[in-house]
Image 1 (tube, rainbow, N blue to C red):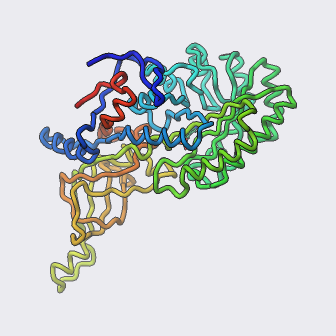
Image 2 (image 1 turned 90 degrees about the vertical axis):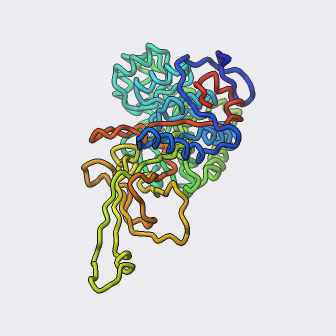
Image 3 (image 1 turned 60 degrees about the vertical axis):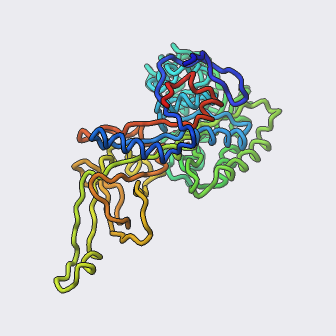
Length: 444
Ligand SMILES: Cc1ncc(COP(=O)(O)O)c(C=O)c1O
């Protein structure tokens, strides 16, 4: 196979080379679909007498979401929040699409750099950083970083005096499923003092950032937060600081069935930006989307490894069919809340899942009240309660959609259950359009 040194953006320009350690992706060609891929993978596992859980990652979905971003928020450059899902295949795809990266630690910075991302495409967007991580950023040319307190300024002055600082402010996050402002962000009243202190320490403050909270449901949240940021830009001017960067953070929806559509947020954001930060203001606008890019791209496939039928309130005079209505099913999957489904206990933005059967289901099939458990010995390892599905058998497979956000990155191997394997797939058309063979090992 021909080896390329660079990758191509959507407008056809060559961008940058990535490290030669490629990861594998499977190509969907000749009309093969993701469902066909899952069917084949299940057969393959069966032939190997294995039933390990796995994710399929739809890289085309990420590509489409990126185009949707460019179309709806043309003034806002996305810096993908690596914490949301740091799967190398995901980061490579986003790098091929020329996004920036929001890293929260030395480890995430190292990962991004190892994949060929250049330091100017990274923002170290954590307001409270260990000194050694700041020094690592400094040593590797990562200059852009956030802060929200005087103590952080003192640390940065010692560890990275040439940093380009972004002041994280607290904003109203009351309409978000995961709130962040109680932990991070300077209040507007503290801004003047912080800018003064930065000046005394000889530090450069280039802009403002905020996060409206993850899983934002407030249609106007970004509008109010952008107005707060404008206020900070105006305060900065009084202190002789000319800011040039606005970072509108994350909080964008990652799934189609979310209560507010991405386009609704975009309309509000564009309106607020045009009014308060018009293009001729010269302010660069960036964002830190996490969920937006990955949530719907990942489908989890897990296996029923055990089953228990519980008969409730059995009436000895009733017949078998009546008793079948009193049957409650318990199924045990080989993945659960300590593995891929950690979102159920850690992510208030995604605390329910709806597993569905891999096999086709007839509408006439009897359904049973069922509880689905994870594999560990812990009784809080419960996937879902009280769902009504046809009877399952050991060896059956269940699928769960929208599993890409805060899943892989939080999962553990508690009780010795291995983390789900990850299979990225892409259509031949997208692979060709983006010249992905330069950054992945392609499997046909
Ligand atoms: C600083 C920062 N930026 C970006 C994100 C990504 O947010 P989301 O996944 O809601 O887009 C987070 C999530 O916690 C965050 O803390």
